[in-house]
Amino acid sequence: MNQNEFVESLSSMEPERAAEFLRPAMSQVLAGLDDSGKMDFLLSLLGSAERDKLASMVHL
Image (cartoon, rainbow, N blue to C red; front, side, top):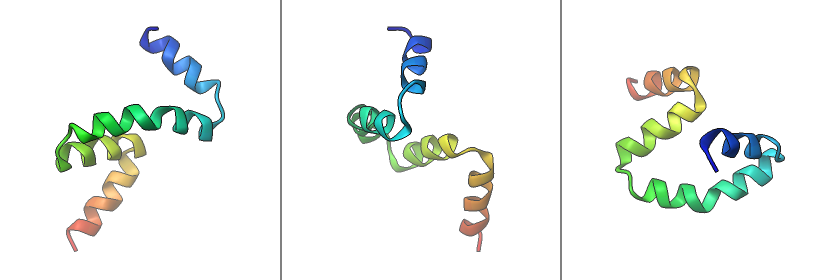
């Protein structure tokens, strides 16, 4: 399965089912990242608005 097929398959699922489907693989991927890598990845999922909000809280 290529990336486009994978994304299409996930997009056809209910969000809760897609998240549950991704959980085991994401646990393995995140376990291989350091804290900075985990934060960068998670913030990229949330988008730039959330990243800016977090950055402003860190600088308090």
